[in-house]
View 1 (cartoon, chains in turn brown, cyan):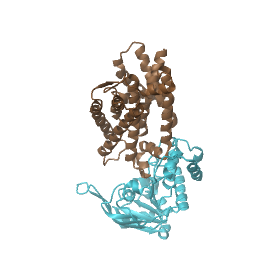
View 2 (spheres, helix red, strand yellow):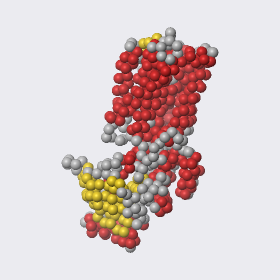
View 3 (tube, helix red, strand yellow):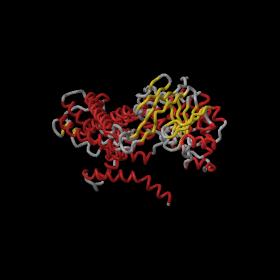
View 4 (cartoon, chains in turn green, red):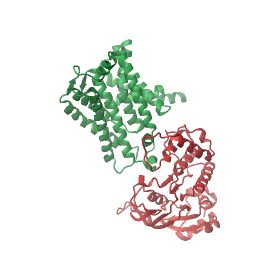
Length: 301
Length: 275
């Protein structure tokens, strides 16, 4: 039980930045961004490559984040070119295509950056090691969970602050009523590109931290990120509600943790193999998506 | 306070689908001179070019030929978001003018920044909140007590009142209203129209109001223009329109256009109009 809890919290918090990124793209910008499958691994690959070249752990982590941001910015610019002429905000075609194209391209980029499909990091120092040295504790188990929780809260509040600034409000409005905020003089193309950069930076941060924590970066580690991210977002919204932006950002972090706890538990009870997880996740997202409709039907009956 | 601007259209022409069988001349060499502070009501049958006129001024699309001036500035080639700081606009659909999942104070704070650079200062600052509260109080709809409510939770009339405030709160040089009371029930439409009149008068805004309601067109504003087939076919000043009633207006349209002005929607508003 103890093991399920600590590994669920650890994984949930490691991936919470990814879930925040998916939330930012999917909910705030109304952009179902498939780039995240590629940018999670891109963050991991860049960090791993830098670590094996004896770069400091901090710079290696930031390098991973920057790589993800670059990927997001590219998707944003590509979307802008693909949709040129059509200003229909609810046209998801170009959004999906832009994400798929960059995601596919990133697969090769990741192999190029790493030089092979997998880089072990067991002999490299990591952010967790350095932080542990600094605090004179072992960064494992609950110590790691507490450190990650503090960091997550800091990132959550930073995002919260950003979304309430003048620019942040314009970003929220770009996904909510694009025509309106354009009529107030905001170049929504620019805002969207920047937002996608930020979102994928967060996703890559998770990729970088996960790689350092698990001791390797792998070209396949990003597969299914979008679905796992949606699972976190939707579980969070359904369980904890979405009263305000500040609240919903906590909700999706909570959703990320609950999702990983469910996975840890389902592996632990032995009914499922790790290879079953993708299907389970897909079913979980379907169930969570259906929940509001089912609830409405039941209430009506 | 920004000065209200005049508008000048010179041979403004807009052709949709040019050189195809579907070619439509929506605006046909329109010359229109709007004085600063004018409140002009615009009527016309369906497809007369009323909305195209507003869209051309707002920059939703470029003119096929001719030019648009706002004040002493030629804005013919300026992109839509560039004109945004000069022009406030309210549409028929109350959902069009607001961000539904954001709060009243967030929506209005964004509107206060019309056309300005948006930085990393707090969006809903205390100064802005105070200003917004004052503006909401003047609406007399009790919205000043619901400033942190999501706009989606408001009624159509309340949303349209917020849209109107968002269009005018930063005192644009031109206000354009595109049938902005048409989707509301008559009582609410009356309230919104009263608020509109009050705001326009208080701020001395240059205003163009498209409506299909001839009574409104006669009752409000200092000038009335009637459009037909992409042209201005009738242009009445305050004195001329003050002596006219709705039936006179219908007759006038007959004279200049040679066909009936009465459309289904006008009949709904004025059941006695069957000619």
